[in-house]
Image 1 (cartoon, rainbow, N blue to C red):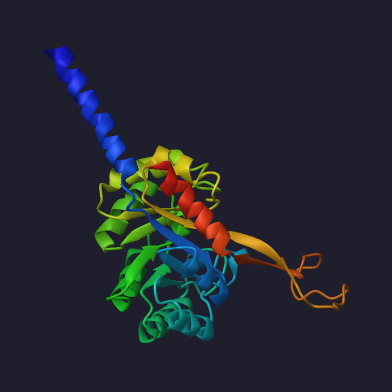
Image 2 (image 1 turned 180 degrees about the horizontal axis):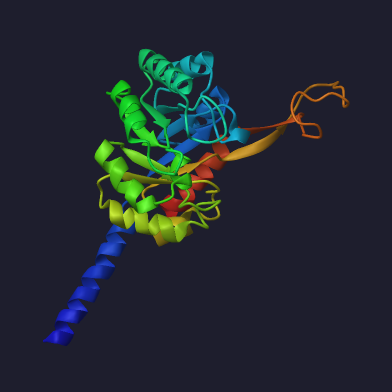
Length: 273
């Protein structure tokens, strides 16, 4: 009887895993650095975009014009906007916070679907007070706690705090440089979340590793950029002058392409058929 019971439990376990992995209720979010990238994300079948400026700094709040045009042109794909006034750490001054509140107001006025932000204390904890303030300001919009989570000192404690605060999801690479390297932490977060908050795996996800990450973690939401390099059409440029860091390639830009968005999404969907 015990052998039969153990066999039945094992069978039910594998059936549950199969159901989880065959369920195509995945969500695909594109980290878009421009309106052009937003449109490519939509054409490629993404569910959401996170519109960001300042990608080399990890993403900063985009311009009013970018947000307005993205909202105007995206009719099938949800628009989320990062609220991050500067690069660097996630310990914000009172003036930083005022800027973030003003940016949330603008997003709400423009009809943005969701906002993405995250504030920490100086000792690597969740800044409960500031996040509560921003959440109350963003009421009616979806809210994502961004990769500030990957700088948290105690991730499992932070997970419970973010659930209690009422965030809809956490964007994380599992506290590692890439989501693939953070598979073990992502797996634990997904298990501990128990459906109370969505775990959005991000950083370094592409058509070659999305299936592996999904199978190992059981995460259902994925954040990736699907970018390709595009060389400038300028016929002349002064090689002695740089607009940013000296030696940096300023004749090439990275743009999301419909092809890479579609390929990455289809890689996962085809694996479950």
